[in-house]
Length: 87
Image (cartoon, rainbow, N blue to C red; front, side, top):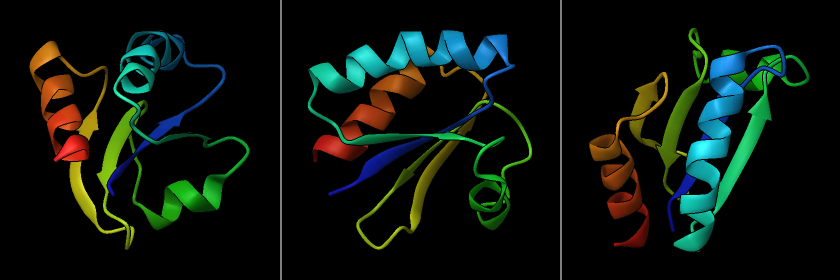
């Protein structure tokens, strides 16, 4: 089952607003998600080549990336993320 990886930093205002916007929708759809603070887990971000914040990745059960979104996702992108995770 795919899950959503949300890469953020605690100092980033856009990251905080992105979390407030998408986490409730992911929870409502019962989609697994992980919020990764790159300040606390820089190696996780480096392994995934995260260069912009926030970055949202959808990964499959083998951690293969299915989709990536840099910045706050639009409604259309969020719908695509949800579709990938509930199929």
